[in-house]
Amino acid sequence: MNKIHLIGSLILGLCSASAIAGVSNVTPSQCQVMTNKNVMAPNAPIQCNRLKNVTFKHYDFKGKTATGQIVVLDAVAPYVDHIFTELYQQRFPIAQAKPIENYSGDDIKSMDANNTSAFNYRPITGKSSLSLHAYGVAVDINPLQNPFVEFTSWGTATFKPLKGHEYSNRMLQRLGKENRKGFAEEVINIFAKNGFIYWGGYWDTPIDFQHFQTSRDMAYLMTTMPTKEASLFFSHYVDWVQSCQQNYGTKRMNEFKDYTSYLQAELKTTTSLNRLYKVNPNAVMQAINKKAQVSQTRCFK
Image (cartoon, rainbow, N blue to C red; front, side, top):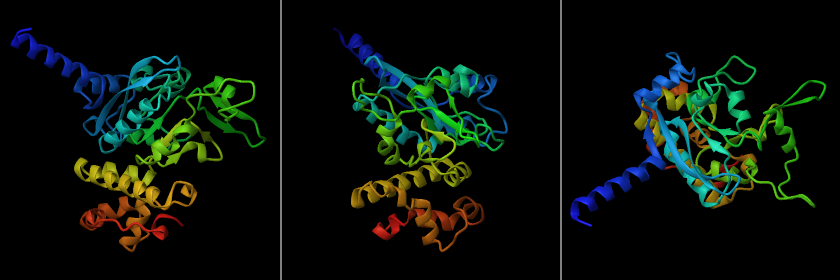
């Protein structure tokens, strides 16, 4: 092979690798498609310049390798990439992952297709306030195996997607049956150690087994901040979670005091960080830039 052909092959290989893995910008043409398909709007809390594609390899439920892509807020994108890299390494199956413009922003259609997704400018299901998907800080994984379950006052349960009722029994191993795969319970800690400590499976009603997110105050804060500051905040947030887990384990996560609570204590305030940042951004950034002091009483209630 001559030098020209060798260089050409190397460039092609690099392009091919970048096409199937990693974090990339949402392009103007993609943004236009998102707008046309009701996934993005001029009044959305974040715009395309603050969104990133996370493209990753994953195993499907037949054990075959596939490529998936989701769209998230820029500050969390590297850690979402870490999540799906680790899921791939553990051979955790994902049915498919396509940006939700493939379903015209229709969450029901996406769930019916068992589609893993993230950003979507839409309200919370059944409510008027915006979902954290509209901020790019929520991920829904394998909706069929991890359904959204609502309860009426008289105890009737409704599953979305409808066939999700087949997975209402959450045991992975059952006598005389094949082991279940793709359940969110298996990957709670992978999401948590990358900053997504809030899981919809912890809720009482509705129960949203597919759903992982940051806190709402974090979503407001990071979309108020410019990208550089939001990225710094979230990286320190992840460091906080991992330091608490490494020093004190993961079995007390029900008593966990997250990094935002730590910062509020450092700033001697009960005001939300988002509101405080709008009034005094320098004070908030000084607290973030200061090395966090992890201790058992700081990490847990």
